Image (cartoon, rainbow, N blue to C red; front, side, top):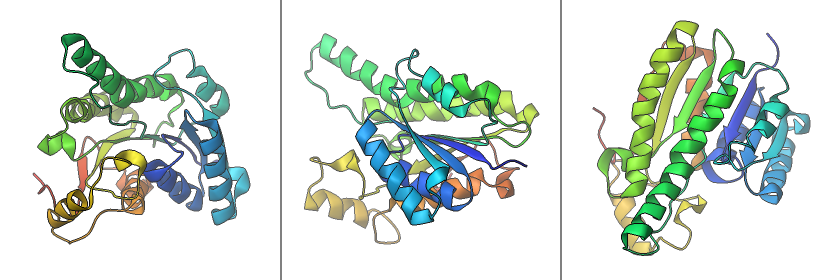
Length: 248
């Protein structure tokens, strides 16, 4: 088999960067996607240096909410089979005002950032997914399971329902679709400017293991789902939250 190819959206920082580094270390070549070209380039260089495989990671600057830009990813794939697609792009949008227009704008932006990015990228790369053996992995959030994030919670929960449908469609082609749902991961940009010491302590106390998660915790879960060992695992929500939400 040719060297496996992985595509990781939101790959410039935090969880996405950790996932990309893990997959490169496992022998994949990886395309890291994101909107900030300089951040992506720096991350690609760092991953290449840390893994000793500078040729294995490439950065593609793209706004995945824009259908016209997604062709850049298809061009970068250049006809190769895609073994692993990790839809990690997303983010939290603060409501600007409580008017109906403001609410509508916030919900549209949140759904675009967290749902449409995954839908459009997956649709664009669906013909290229390796058959058999392709892996589609969506990064959700504990907010989808316990609420508390308003539009963000709803958007992440939407990924769960879509994953079930996509898994049913792709299963006959031996392509799996799964969701990783992280709990509180402190070392990301997600909480920049929004986390207090009290909030951190409260989230850690809510776990059963007494600590915050790390990007590497999430990356290890993705590593498993991306591996041949997970070929019989599909349409599942894997909670990686330290026990903050019990499995169901």
